[in-house]
Image (cartoon, rainbow, N blue to C red; front, side, top):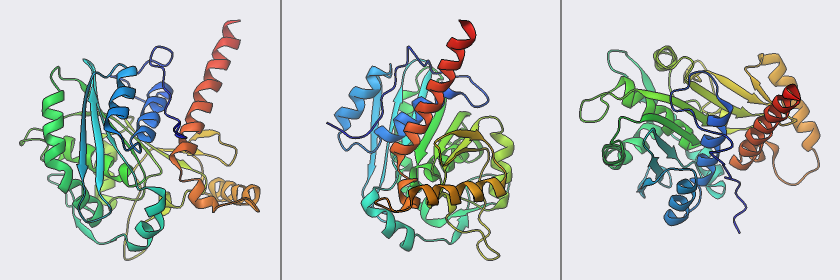
Length: 299
């Protein structure tokens, strides 16, 4: 029995294809998909998304350098096409953090001088032909495109949204990405990239970060590297509660609180906070809390 939590009931928590603003049901679905991406079995993943109502499924698997590989899947129904990138396996995370290449390369956004992380963009570029084929084959009804991912997958998801909507797109045709939700995302580009990206995806892009998640703090900001984070931050505090944005000083205090509460327990807090299962549990807790409030208000 898998230890991963990717339970999602679309009848109970319907996905809204044309939503703007942070939508809890959509966040729950995309978190479940990001966790499901770690399963190795294509048939298991296809079977699971079919339960969610997505009858079309294609997998993307590149086993080349840089990184261990680039894995993703694309699924679709008549209204939604979802692109889901897998992140870095826990056993490879420390090697990835120490060996990751921080150099910039030209980014995907047209008509703007933008720079992005070399390793991330090369990883996406390797997968792009397979991704183009999957989108072309599955997007048969102009479905709304949603993109998601965790860890390295979150960076790839962000670059995909930028490349589809602001770059070359597919066969020189740009596609409007309706929504992007990422979990435990590292910094991906420079300020010019982030500025252009945020302007295009305002109200449709949400970056979820969990307390002391170490990956959400790399590559480091500095005078030489000049990496920036995309908006909008949705922060999970030390108690597992979700906050739409949070002041820097409150994040620092909450981070200390998280370290204090985790002191003496097995494992490193910064790595445990990065686990996609913990993101999934926080999203489920948030959605269930809203459901309880709604029922209380109606009673």
